Length: 293
Ligand SMILES: Nc1ncnc2c1ncn2[C@@H]1O[C@H](COP(=O)(O)OP(=O)(O)OP(=O)(O)O)[C@@H](O)[C@H]1O
Ligand SMILES: [Mg+2]
Image (tube, rainbow, N blue to C red; front, side, top):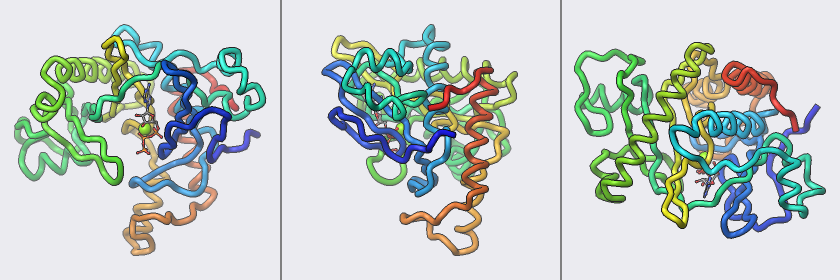
């Protein structure tokens, strides 16, 4: 039985500790991302790690980066612990923190927008449509019902908030901030990745309702898709039990949690059901067995 990892501590300079990943510097062109088993919901990081979650996120992203490389190149270099240790000998004593969950990537300058694509209308998009008949500020066909499929899918970018919730912005806003050429590239790549991913996952029993991509630029001016891709953390996977969010939403409804840190403790059944959900998504999409750390 593998021991869940709350946080990695590797002998490399730590660039950033996100809600889920540690980002280490390998050299000027290369980063090492380590996906922990931390779980966040409603923008709060829970105390209990979810077994196998980090490995699912890393290996599912690696699967998509390779499969969808024809749409756009990614930052992916390797998720193989042997290759990573061969490249960075200082990590040879830290294999258990790497196996299955570490990814060596090309370092980029991240584009400061979340590139969201929606193929079904739900969540904040449904709220906007109900209020003003628009999505990302653009008018949408009238009469859509909640969870309706959107054909074609819609690019609906958001700002990257350092703290708190991301905010939806219009495509025009992205054009003004980044210039038309880059904005159009982001939109085209996001829609291409989403449509290919949605088409691949659907016959395998998972509807990817919406998702968020991140992109970065290299010093020589290439645009790459970075971070994680088409995972249960960056996307809404349907049909899916949402044991963790359902449990927390119940506590909020009953007035037992106000939605802010510190988070409430999670019962063991909720942690186990959440772990199962990640493993199931991995198995359905890739048809492979997860490499356990
Ligand atoms: N190739 C890359 N080049 C540069 N930065 C990257 C690259 N890939 C991922 N990142 C960054 O690494 C971080 C990954 O950490 P994580 O996913 O835990 O954080 P996050 O979701 O952005 O932040 P948080 O959840 O804390 O708000 C992100 O800030 C992401 O933008
Ligand atoms: Mg992230």
